[in-house]
Image 1 (cartoon, rainbow, N blue to C red):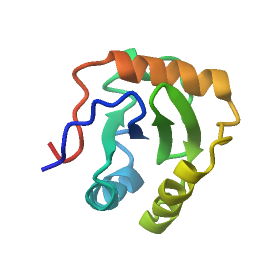
Image 2 (image 1 turned 90 degrees about the horizontal axis):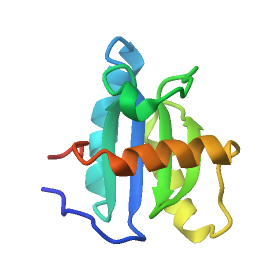
Image 3 (image 1 turned 180 degrees about the horizontal axis):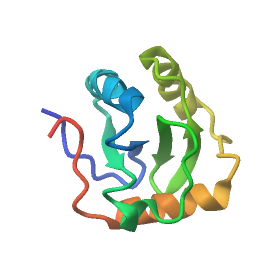
Length: 126
């Protein structure tokens, strides 16, 4: 089972999905495998329609979309190809890229703030 991650510098990987999305359903298994491969990171599956309180006004045009953050700093927000290798390469490279920032910094930071405040979000392997 995944270790609880509490460090202020801990990595957080949030998959933004929707229950009706067939691609998301297929991607969930790959996301769970990645959670096992990167046990030092916290992986959360967030249904944007069930958790509008967290998703806010975020307009997801392409599923799956992912938010990646280190501590309170968003590093990436956007769609990813529904292939485990694509996200795995991002998770390997982002920790080494101190200057990484999402294109929509404010939107990503606001989403991250809501995710961090939602104490009832569960890790995918819990």
